[in-house]
Length: 106
Image (cartoon, rainbow, N blue to C red; front, side, top):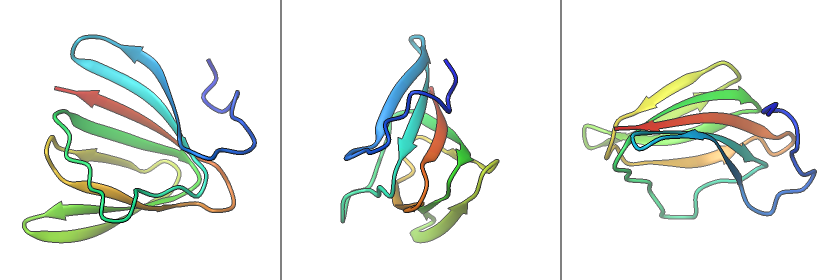
């Protein structure tokens, strides 16, 4: 599978495609099209998440030491989000698809 192909021209919701999976690791392609986390929603995941932004752009809010850090991602930028570190997607590129690779692991 080519991660830049088979992407619908219009996405009402983010597109999640599992590329590989085992009991302890899952690798996904995520495609966003101006999407963001719902207002007030924060992810708090059981697994670590390593992401790599391939195209587009994204702004994440990440809780660190009782403060919120704004993280801006451009193509080629990775980010490691440890398990149970609350985070949310504040915004993704409104004029082009944002494509991410996400690796979830214990």
